[in-house]
Length: 391
Ligand SMILES: Cc1ncc(COP(=O)(O)O)c(C=O)c1O
Image (tube, rainbow, N blue to C red; front, side, top):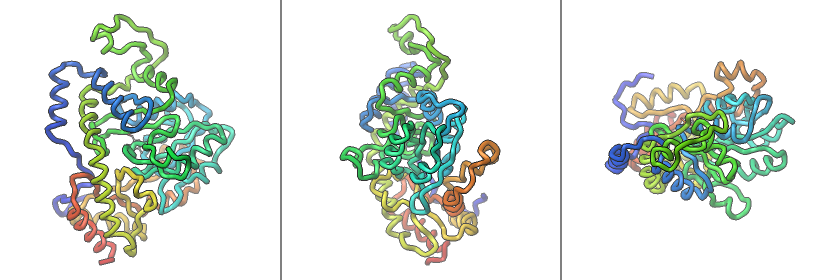
C-alpha cells in the first residue's frame, strides 16, 4: 500500500522511556548477556503476575509453542486442532514436530475465536491436542475447551500471544472467573515481539503449572544440557550432562531486563487500552456497515488489537486505503492459515471454514496502543464512520 499523507496514527506503538534504557545499560555494565539472573527474575515475576507455577523465558512465542509440542509429546501421525484464524506460527509449531494441524472454524463474526462445537466435531482417534488462540486479547471459551479436552483426553496448549494480562471468560468454578489467561491449559505461550503489549523486541514465555513439563522445557530450551553457561560462569557448576537433543531457544539478559520494566508498566497499559477500546465502542458501536466483534468479552480482554468487520468484503481493501490516505494505519488479522499455499498443499482436506474466510475478508484492525488518547480515538472513529458512509 502507498500512503498519500504522512502517517498520523500508527497501528501500534510502544511505551519505552529511560527506565528501559537504564535497565539495559545495567545489564551491559554487568557484562553477562545470555540467560542468567535477570532472566530468572523475569520468569519469577511473570509467573507471579499470572498466578502460574512456572514460567520459562525463551527466544520467541514460536519457540515456546515448539517446546510445548515437544513437552506434550506430540509426534508424526498426531492431529492437533487449531484455528485457521491465527498467525501462521501457531500452525507451523504443530508442523515442526510432524503432527498435522486440523483447522477449526471460528464461532462467527461476533466471536473470532475457535468454535468449541467445531473442535468437538473434528476430533478423531488421532487427535491429541487443542491449541486455542486468544485472538486480539479476547479469551477463547476455555470452559468448553477444557471440558472437551477432559472428555477426550486431549492436551491443551494456549497460544496466549495476544493475551497477556487478559482474564478468562466463562462461568465455571470460581477461580476460572478471574484467573489470568495462560493458566488453564497444560501449557501457554506468550510473545514479546516488537508490537506486542509487553515488548522486548523478540522474546517469549512458556508457562505451565506442571512441574514435569516445566523441567522438560527448561532442558530442551538450552541444548538438553543439565547446567547453563551462567551456572558455569558464576562458578556454580564445572561440568554438565546432555540428556537429549535440545535447542538454542534461550533469551538474553537484555530481553529479560526490558521485560521486567515492561511488566511493571503492563497493568496501567492494559487499563489505558481498555479505556481507548471503550471509546471506540462508544463511537463505532451500532454504526451501519461496521460491526465490532467480541463485545461480550470486552471486560476480559487484554485489548491487544481492535478488530472491526466491514459489511462489504469487496470494499475492505479500499476502505483501508482510504483510511491510510487520511494518515491512519490499519492491518488485517489474519489471512486464514489454510489459504496460504503451503497449507493448501499440506492440508488439502481443510475446506469449509466459511466463517473464518468471511470474517478474514471483512476484517480491518484499527490503531490501538497506550500512547493514544481519547481525542485520537475520536479522530480515527470519525474517519472510519466517514469512510464507511455512516457520517
Ligand atoms: C497468535 C500468534 N501466535 C504466535 C506468534 C509468534 O510469536 P513470536 O513472533 O514471538 O514468535 C504470533 C506473532 O505475532 C501471533 O500473533
